[in-house]
Structure formats: C-alpha cells, structure tokens
Amino acid sequence: MEKLNILYEDKHLIAVVKPYGVLSQGNENTKSLCTDISSYLKEKGESGEVYVIHRLDKTTGGVMFFAKTKAMASKMSALIQNGDFHKVYYAVISGKLEHNTGALADLLYHDKTKNKTYVVKKERKGVKIAKLCYVSHGNAQFEDNDVTKVEVLLLTGRTHQIRVQFASRKHPLVGDRKYGSEIAYKNIALWSREINFKHPFTGEHIKVTADPESDIFNLDFRLF
Image (cartoon, rainbow, N blue to C red; front, side, top):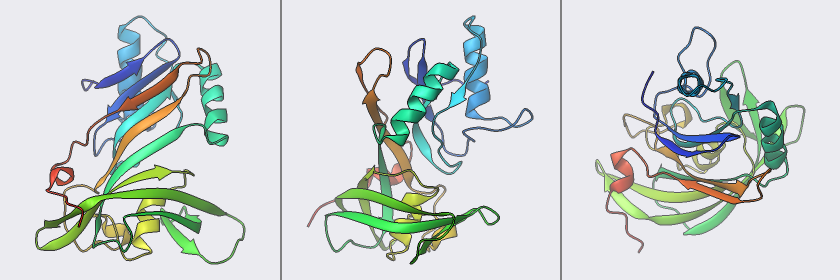
C-alpha cells in the first residue's frame, strides 16, 4: 500500500491527494486509490468500505473525497447533483488568452469507445451542457512556448470537460496529446486544487486544498 497523503478525515468521509498516474478506482485486480484507502481503513480497524463520490482521470492529480458509508455516498451524490459540491482546478494551457477572466459553455458528447469528448453544436442523446469559469494567473514561457496558468471553477462535471473546452478554443492543456497539445510534458497540466461544500451531517463548511505536485505550475507566471 502506498502512503496516503490524507487531507481530511472523519467517520463519514476521507479526502486524500491523488498522485498523477494513479487510477481513482479499479477492479479487484487493479491497484487504485480506492484499494489503498480501503487497506488504510482496515488497518485502523474500520470496515474498509470506500465509495467513490467523484473521479479524476489517471492523468490528473489533486484533491479527492471518498465516502466511508452508503448513506454518506448518497448524501454527497445529492450535493453534486444540486451543484453544492464546489471544485477548483489549476491548469496550464497553451498560448495566451484574450481575456484574463471568463466563462465557457459548450454542448459536449463523450464517446465511450474512444474515451474522448467532443464539442457539438446540437443537443441529442448523450449530449450534455458543460459550464466553467476561469481566472488567469498570468503568462510564462515553457520550452519556447507561451503558456498560461488558469484557475478553473467547474460549474458542471463532465468527462474531460476542462481539457476539451480549452482545447476547442485552441488552448489545449500542456501535455494533453489526446486534445491536440504540441507541448511535450510528463503529465497533463491539470490539478484538482480545492474542494469545498457543506457537510451533509454536521453542517460544517469543509474546504480542503492541495498544492500541485508538478513543476510546471511554479513557472514565473505574470499578468501583463
């Protein structure tokens, strides 16, 4: 079992940092963050039950929450459905943005056979609205390329949403070959920076953050 970076824990929930390259959830024969958390809980004398509330791609790292009980998993699913589970990401994208702040809205279709999401023009079966807001943290140079660091507030949680919404505007995330990045990097430059919500049982406001574990987020970004 890998050593977990635990950010928050109570009898209902546990929040950890998901490293890059690790699956959020696998099957019985596949190592994942779920299996590590389950082993950790069993070592503490707990049941070891782990319920996935939300997912991060294998190529993305950062804050993740898991439920320890079915009741909590149900409550958290309701929070997410109601838009009361707030997720903030950092991303480094190719090029310079025309505006330092903005909102993006698109119709997205996820092709499960290709594991790829597309921006489409018309609503049809399987198409979902995707919305986010962003703030630029400035521009920098990376291997002779202009790049921009953005802070993203997700308003919906679609598969590959941040990646495809910026890529469709000719700003693919650094290292994201699937969506057209021409800048090579060891990871996709995307990180789950913060999650906050009102605890369904205690009413406490929970806010958990983690700094990115990738050097590209530490470039000398400057607003001009």
